[in-house]
Image (cartoon, rainbow, N blue to C red; front, side, top):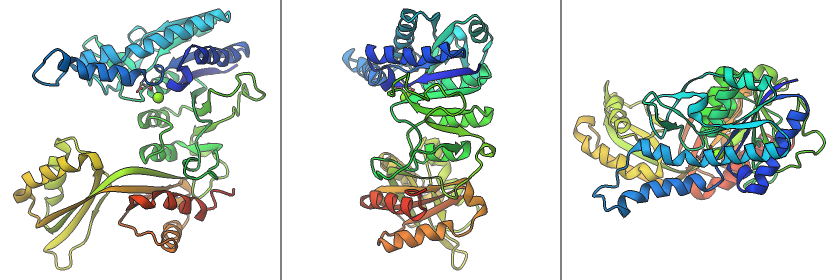
Length: 424
Ligand code: ASP
Ligand code: MG
């Protein structure tokens, strides 16, 4: 017997037939004798619709400003999950399973006060555990909790992954199965490289890089949480026949296991290639090379909530002037340029240049820590294809390369094949 938290994303609960199919997945695990709790997202598209209503209401009501109360935003957008949790409980009951739906505040999933992007502070898992012991399946509305102000708080878009991992940690589950519309984590995006392979296992750290660097399978925060609490997380498809052979395999269900690196015996040097589109580059030229310049640049940018990513600074020739280049999402460029020009005197630069529509491709693998030449291989392969590199940043387990947008797909395929990811 295992204790399993099963999470179903928006496409998996997109309509009543699919919710019935989800109930069959849950029934399979319950029938096998496991203790099960379920977390659901809203029907796909529902949260977008709700967000749109929130944003439109002030306009329709003739308000002078588009401002709305974040606490009411949360009350509204959390309702999508309320619907799917109730529907799934009914579907399960129809299959003869003792199931009951729960809202975030009823569990309670306690969060901080950051409405719209709240973080979970703690969850008391004892009631869910007690119910599991009685053979009851708790169906929990994902994406929501309750803030210290006693109001519903949502966890940021894609947050039901985080709900699931947090509940899995709270009830000390053996596994957290994330059911989605893809059947696992791939070496790269299969829409770009059809030879991409599904990975059997990915280390938490690698998954964290992949999610942060553009792979959209899991919410970044959920991977962080899984890593901290060592929650073994499987990414698997809800669209497979719930009763197909192997679906109920306890140790190796079909999909990708995200786990501690110690569980990965045969570690490849490179695990995957991620990419993020719509990056923009900003360069400050002839910047004074003195203590405090970086603080003078990035302080005001962070105060304006501009998310700066790659930062490259050169060592100046004579200790007087240097260049600083960094990247931001394309949509933030104008705001960033405004902040910089407002602070030009304080920062002390000559000119600023910017370019939108760039792409960041990243090579990820914990095997890089103990292997030399991984970066050189990437640079050679890109050079052979005539792809110019604009900036490079690295960490122990990743190399990120900034290139021109039109080369994105070629670069992803080139990097994918230069490490043999299409073959292994
Ligand atoms: N329904 C929420 C969203 O669309 C949460 C989730 O799906 O994970 O962002
Ligand atoms: Mg989702």
